[in-house]
Length: 303
Image 1 (tube, rainbow, N blue to C red):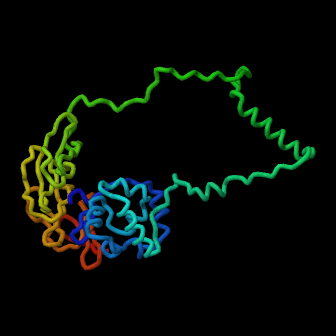
Image 2 (tube, rainbow, N blue to C red; image 1 turned 135 degrees about the horizontal axis):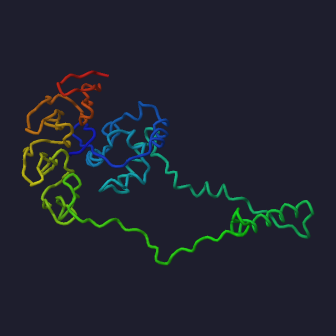
Image 3 (cartoon, one colour; image 1 turned 120 degrees about the vertical axis):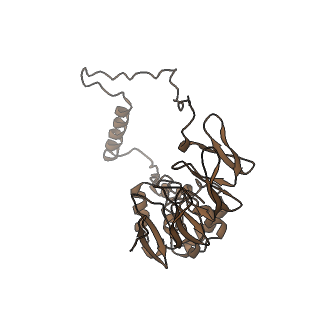
């Protein structure tokens, strides 16, 4: 719904997970752009799953293969059945999720385990015994305490205090600022909490964090904006509504993207198939299969 990076064919796209640049590059380099640019709809993802992924900035096959399977479970509401669906669809296109470097396959570990040498009857030869003794001596030396270079004596390591405990997060002493209010859920509805009390009751089907003084909310599949006093300042009349950025917000009406200002005035008409928030005075829009760079005056430079 709101707070999304991209919008595709009426599906909403927000985010979640920050990946290291190196990992993203490794994932991208595995497949050509023709494969990674395929949209979720073209990939064959079910509409309900595509909508869930869209709310977390996952709109293309490339967004999937940049993530590990473990990353996908950070998406709220994601389950194993959905993972199996995505795994099969990617496999059909000759792709897969980014391998998790922390999870080494059992088979690989077994291959790395040195084979057990059969015991021989009788005494070892001198040539065999010498390396064994050298190895044992080296093991004994490693077990010794490090030596202090100043006096040649074993280094005395300070004992850990019994009073040492893991540090807990600092306790809040005052309410959080508006843009840091936390989402709360009750009976399937969403609201906001300032760290001390509920500031907006759980009454919406979905809410997204406040940005530039307004928060995008959804009820009955219609989106609009509220202020911190929970007053509806822009009616819930849009199919999708991104968070405000640089004074403008991308919204969807009639299946097309456009932009409004905080007075709910249309500043960019609803003619685009996809759109992103403004950043540094520019936004990306898509029309007739082509992407372009949009400026607030409505000018588009097609790529």
